[in-house]
Length: 129
Image 1 (tube, rainbow, N blue to C red):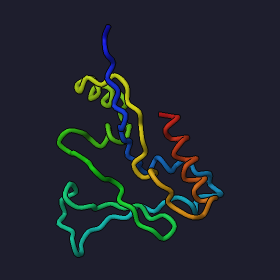
Image 2: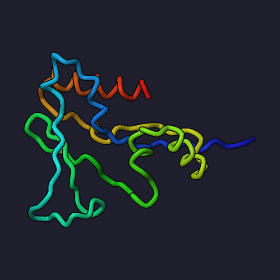
Image 3: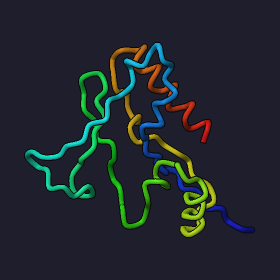
């Protein structure tokens, strides 16, 4: 009997395309992406400090967390190159990945309509991939 290896905590990192599924009449719910270029705690090293942020309903969230840039690429983390993601899984001898959002592990707004459009867009994006 051969065992299958399941990665039960594989993250996918949201990007601008994630929110392209928000319908035009609800575009005001699209998160704004911000980049920190200077200020306290900023050393310019993306892997040491958060540099990019989402602004959602007056709250700022890091775009990326827990990244190991030596072992992954943006295209594998964001699923923009599925073949590369699958190749990386093969290298790690992983047969199946259970994907989790990085940004949406918890609600981001108390506004139910806003939350609906964010999550709808996320689900449409992931389904297309």
